[in-house]
Length: 208
Image: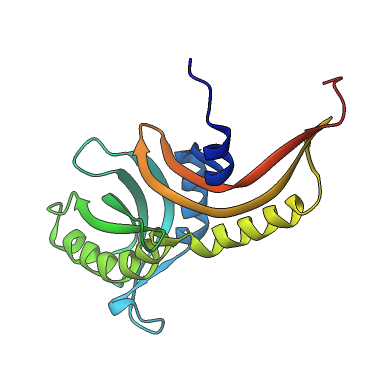
């Protein structure tokens, strides 16, 4: 094992690439808060004709060329088809935009589109209102503001000695905090969190 070049380490500071796993169940709860109770209306307008309401939403890994499968249960509210429950699967393809630091909905596909004329019509309105106004908006997670806020909070703590564990203190400055990649892996969303900065540690107690 070669000895590290201390001058190079001090010049370049600390570089960390940390994989963070988020269970799909956590994302599912987030989507459920946004989707359940959402009214599907013609052209997505608030005063448009009411076609249905989202009763349930479940999130699963996709088995096809997509990342996620969003299973929705819809209660119809039209005059001809009132209080009829329909289940629709939406396959979602995600894309991570490094420059924008955002997770975007790249593509989607409705499964079970040929059940009936009415189901096809409902899915059409679903794609126009629910997908574009809800799923698309909530899938486009712009994370840069949250990362900036996290970096500011962390640097305030690092201005003074920040105790991460009894007897172990950190101080310094975090210069960069950003996402390098985001992808779906089995039952998790994996976020590759990159951090760059000048950090140092101080040991004040060896009893740890």
